[in-house]
Image (tube, rainbow, N blue to C red; front, side, top):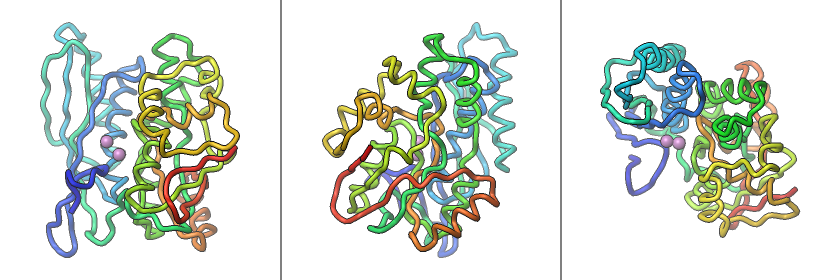
Amino acid sequence: MVGLSSPDDAAVWRLSDEQAIVITTDFFTPVVDTPYEYGAIAAANSLSDVYAMGGKPFPALNIAALPDDLPAEISSEILRGGAEKAHEAGVVIAGGHTVKDKEPKYGLVAVGFVHPQKIIGKGGLKAGDVLILTKPLGAGVTTTAIKQEKAEETHVREVIEWMSRLNREAGQLAQEFDTRGGTDVTGFGLLGHAAEMAEASGVSLHFDLAKIPFLSGARGYAERGIFPGGAFDNKRHFEKDVTFAGLEEAAQMLLFDPQTSGGLLFGAARENLTALMKRAGELGQPVWVVGEARGGEGIRVEA
Ligand code: CO
Ligand code: CO
């Protein structure tokens, strides 16, 4: 149902009229200095693509590449972080494979299930939908500040907390309100993923900068130019699709900041918004209304 011809968060294969299987994998090098939390973030990020398709993950496999000289207690902490995050999600890690490599890499192959009529894809937005975001932006600048040893400790704790957070409740909320258009915000940044969704859905997306949430340190690091290389790649690649009205350079760049284990961005019918906000509160799921889908094409961001 979803494969190479329509790039999305995961592949989907119909098993029956009632059930489809969702398959995805993701792994990356350490984004934080603590091995347990690196493992937890990598696992949350891998499972996120299943939630982003509207699915419920169940079995998963570890994928790891670990240096020969890495102390055993560090590699076991990475795997423990992943296993405990999977357990929190109700996911069983049933095996996996490890190879040797100079730089550690870790993630999961994740499998999940979704009803074939309830797949959430990048092309499912409709003009008039409000756009909901479920985690603040700024993970890329903050983790770059960590790598450059310029990050404040409170900002480190904050970004780890958000990156470790499962998108389970966000996915549940999207499903309960019959969302068909959504994705998780990861390497292409908010505007890169938004541009993909606008094109796939045949709509234009309008964002209001003042409504977009950021991690506490993000603006400060952005103003000091502490961006990961991916932010510049994203800007080069996607800026042709974006019109900015009254945004300074640092704010524009922050919207291209690549996220690790970012939140879901999904559309919801405006008439459901009050009920959706109430339900989000019951689930303990933070949500921000950051814009809306309209007719036309491309992206517009207003200050
Ligand atoms: Co994704
Ligand atoms: Co992915």
